[in-house]
Image (tube, rainbow, N blue to C red; front, side):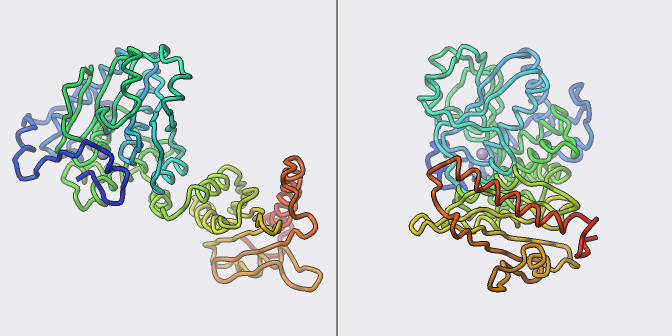
Length: 427
Ligand SMILES: [Mn+2]
């Protein structure tokens, strides 16, 4: 069930034994105990409502147990080991664990040995800032493993990670296993929460959140991003909720209070290369927001990746309080040593005419041709760099050139964005 065909890397999982939904396992696994409020929960809010009646007692019991485990490991450092090709379920849960652990001054590093091969995984990590690191066996050798007092397996049981044996050989104890694959082997772990009848580990982690292990707050950006990541993990392991069961739906319902639908949408638009994601990341990092305009220069990019610029603008315009985004960069064609500044504008503001805006901002060349124009809600521009093209092997020159173009474009845009001397009404 967790093996979604869209996640090819999952094929490498050996954890494929799936419970038969008809074998009654679900009811056998869960002890029916009347709902009682645990001492654990500080928020408790909505718990009885949002966690399926069948499993709430187990979810509570495990949350309480996990909290005790955190308490005994305060101020320590832990490694969270994911499968070599981690999927959104694994990544989002590892991040949630890290955030919960922080409250106990436990510092966790989220590591995997392979790659983020799927577009959506790359998108997830880049767009949410999810703190996962790739550690190869080589990396492991360069680390002082004695500084870690424990390791944790999330959404796997160690059978899909190259890192496991080295970490075990270093004598680091296994602190927790939290997974929804069938039990692979008896694991010597302090804490075990393996629930094969749950469709996503993200459901288990959401239940921990509901039980009060971490109080999500919509005004904290990281919480919103983490909730979005969990929603993505939950959706991708349940084939967009089509295979979700009551617990998974309840978890999704809870996450719906906190997640960012637009961010999730951006993550799901996954037909993007890694280089495109890098450009979007740069646009996020470099953007300046003024008077509801978001402006971002992304530096140099290859000709093949020029489509990343409109995609970045599409993404930036989804930010709260932004109605117009302009993203630009220097696109170079290696063969011809040709360079051109390419920019895109996206707006949701009905009274802003992209064509007029771009023509006003950048004007015309010596032959009277405008550098760009637009249509409803979108526009673009191209400024040839002529004599200044090429010679980028001299990095100081390349940097200087970018800085000049970057400041000139910003000056021209900000002249219009700034209402003081704004010839086009933009509010
Ligand atoms: Mn999973």
